[in-house]
Length: 233
Ligand code: E4P
Image 1 (tube, rainbow, N blue to C red):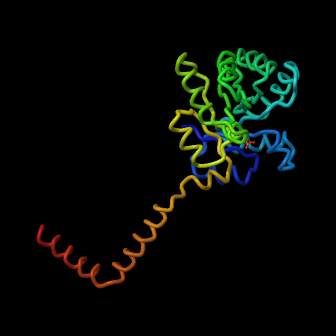
Image 2 (cartoon, rainbow, N blue to C red; image 1 turned 180 degrees about the vertical axis):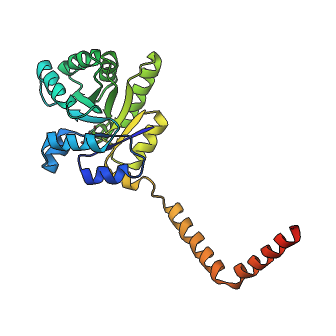
Image 3 (cartoon, rainbow, N blue to C red; image 1 turned 180 degrees about the horizontal axis):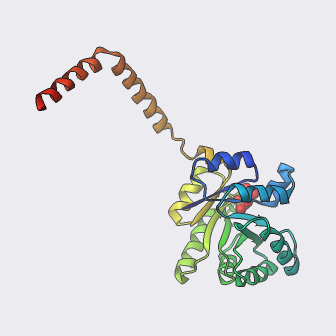
């Protein structure tokens, strides 16, 4: 499963990428607006920092506007993926860009039919917003699973990207469903390895080991090992 970080914060991006577990970045207009940074410069910086794909979202409504925004983004770096909403104009723009060999991430996908159009239009990724579906009282993971089934029926190559992730549970379930990619907010990324049983296991192993090393038992055993080596020789 491919891991993207859903962030525009360079400090978080550096921290997450230093683990070697992050394969790319997704951004969105709300993240950029909330961080108050200049979009062009932050995206350029992210593209330099990360060698994997960096999704950047167009904000124009019409096809022409989307295409010219996409051309501007493509100058930011070779790893730019153009993020386009799953609207009627978005699918047209997606098809035109894909025909030129540009990688497109169809975003704000909430239905099997939108995912079908994304695949037909040649998108590299389709971002299924599972958290927002849950927020609205429906089942986001069910939507993801239906899209997986439909893509498998036809052998579509578009990668299913689980987006709008709210929890570690979402990631575990998306992996079981067979989502190709998950984009993870930093808060959830930090929680990924956390497990109470592992943490208490580490504590009790460490306690037992310290007691053993500080007792006479370890030293006596060292002497016995040395003797055994001598006998073998
Ligand atoms: C995906 O690329 C989006 O940036 C993101 O997952 C949106 O999630 P949200 O519902 O938390 O805004």
